[in-house]
Figure 1: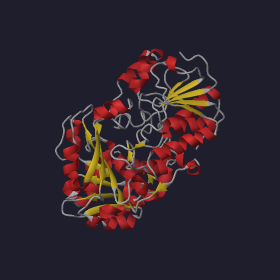
Figure 2: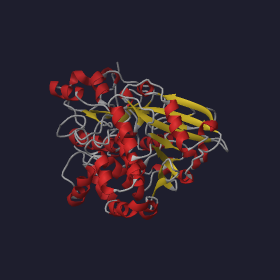
Figure 3: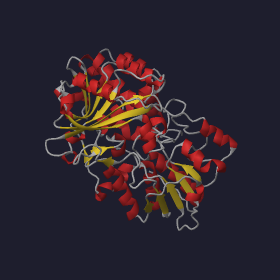
Figure 4: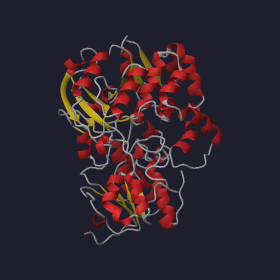
Length: 481
């Protein structure tokens, strides 16, 4: 039982949102303690030698388009605390069986050149929104409210609300643009026939042209460490190896913010909540899981399409029809022989990740929630399909099933790395339909995780908005971006 506290606020969990909330509150003059259950901070932002000595692998998050261009995180002086962003020449490559490849570069014109007959349609689409990403981000990366830029958001919303399959077919004629957009939209971890899946594809494409998709030099842990160091420089405190299992494990404080999902929140503080709020949390929907493999390689991936070597991220899945079929089957609790695969090849651009001449490869596919099925062979076969000879370059590997992910981090329930399904019913109202999605039914207790708007991704915006709400409610302090 913890009896004494010298802190005004306590934050449970040191993922990107917990750290962002801590920084926002500490900057506002509120003394903050962050409790982390593991030996190192970071949540999904951790890096470790998972395979062989000298190889650094990101355990969860790897590529960080939303972090580098987050309306909140980009304001922080994280470069002064060791963070260095590396921008690959191309954000994304999406290869096809015939050796062709769609390549998303910062330049809209250069990207359009790789899309053949759909170059003009793609240019028109992205030129309408990419130059205005900063304005869109103000309205998209937060709770539901009257928009700051209503006309721009309305134009965007009419496209974003559509299912990705229908949007891609109506917007593009050829398989290259359709396939690339399917790969972008599949980050939603939803069937591409569902309403609003086009939104994820549009946002990721827009950010690719606005800022790019960077990687933190040395690994995702360096982003966490920079945020933690800045938080401490402001006077904040962090205690690791402090797993919170009940309210008795939390020092008394005026405000407690939880960087966890509804399932864990109910276990820790369910007795504090109203019957209605508990019912709402119990109805919260989690999404599908992931199966991840990290490889140590004795050389780069031997892509058929050489331009894949330009990209930090590679999507494997072929055509729109193939990607859509894979995601739909997984949503229906089926495992697929040819899954949509997301790869990150950080060592091509960051020499700190592997010994000289060697390389790392990070990759995962989606699987049904709670799956323990080994998907390594299927993932490797998909890579081999587009990079013959890949398997011959493997010198080490590390595998994590959906069950392993939940064991590693209870927030990843069933292997869901997004903190809950990001469908139309849970985009702005997650985890419950309330005036503020960050405030619980108990005064002084708040949720600041990716189970609140704007949802999954490393951007810290859930934490910032929760801190803003707690500061106003409890401390009568107002902050803004």
